[in-house]
Length: 125
Figure (spheres, rainbow, N blue to C red):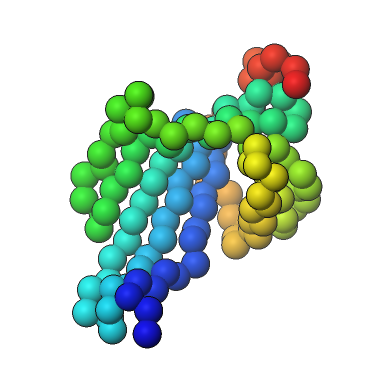
């Protein structure tokens, strides 16, 4: 059998920073240990098709979040390949695709301010 079994990764993208939260539940051995790992990252708009993702913190078993020092923060550019109401396909600089499927279409009443198309735009590609 597998030493570590991972469940589906859940990613939540919100309007306020840090915008991305990834959560994965896992099991070690034959279920002798079950846990959760969570990571948060900042998502910045660089152009109409390019975004920059920077990992900022991580937690294990819902304990206190550990801030990742800036010199150790992993950062990558991601490129929007396709987007509609239920599907988002992005690629990183190496071209590896990530296909994200909307789980729920529930939006909180107080979802924060509307994003500004002009203010959030970085330099063109």
